[in-house]
Length: 124
Image 1 (cartoon, rainbow, N blue to C red):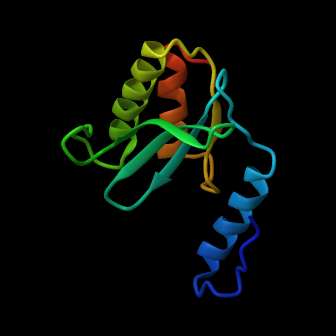
Image 2: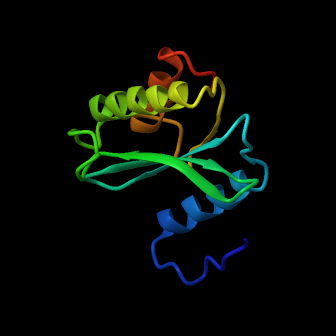
Image 3: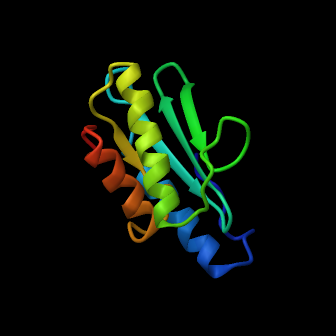
């Protein structure tokens, strides 16, 4: 899974990729504790719940599209997405997850998302 980070021109993108690869070495989601993977852009927030044993995405929630949450990629939007993720996990009778922040710093939107998942009864 190692990717060359010499190809990336942005220093911040290189640092994020290095953090992401370092984090992904240790995080593995299974059927009892799936991995919650977060991706964000300046306008949208994407969250997937992944079972790494079967290489399947159980479900995803984003801030756009027909099935998406009508919100922006800010702290308030992250709280709504976190509540929707917790609701989907409860439907599938999953009580704990592994949180994959994808190299983003645990601050702001990422922290609000994780806190929202915790507040809605899922162990992160």
